[in-house]
Image (cartoon, rainbow, N blue to C red):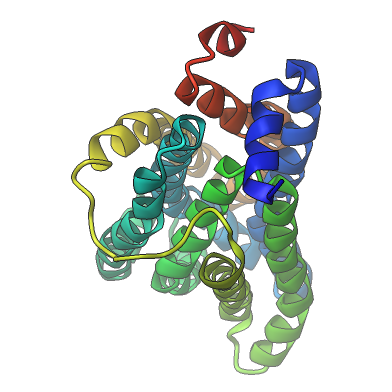
Length: 319
């Protein structure tokens, strides 16, 4: 029995509790790892550059959720279509998913890169950032926007791997990028601090780590995946309505988080200045980890729900 059949059979026959444990734990660990990117940037620049640099990375964080929102829109929507197609044994739909995902990533990521880099300073002012924190944050965020394509592809394609049911491998690939980021952060910050560019070093460490993660993910779909192949890279009109309708609700959570944190930073700036923004940033980094188990459970369990729905096992979906 091949791996594709094994995964499909497990999703259709294992007990819901067993599936929840086996699917959710890798997803939770993977999301913790993703959350470490901005956290470790803030920690290292705070220790190695200064408190204003830590504040700059913190006020930039809400705007990195623009990429998170896009990757969630594409990834969750595509994973949902995939898992239902697996349940139906619809290979024609499966063969279109990665080409469509890459096309969507190219269009939306290029738009974010261009608009983001041009209007970086203007959007950062929405948080109330000013003075040195604004200047540092602008330099940091422009580099992050420049790497949008790598970030979005790595994260959205990783969600498709989860939809395939390959959660452990997806977790390992994501974990590799996070470990690289932790290793590269102090190295690049130290090297670039000599030129007063320590914060830029943290941004480059993040983008380089995501580039390597994206490359490994692309290699997996080109060479290793037995179920999903990259065929023609084009928008598939037959898939877009389903992807966007499912992915939009997941993206909305990221968008509302972005709006909430932008308002909070603005209020902190008005009433407490730079100091309150720095403290708020540290608190929000820790607070965000409290919700990861819930998000991980929902994302991890999605392949089971989608595959059973596609196989018309509606009673099992309810269970």
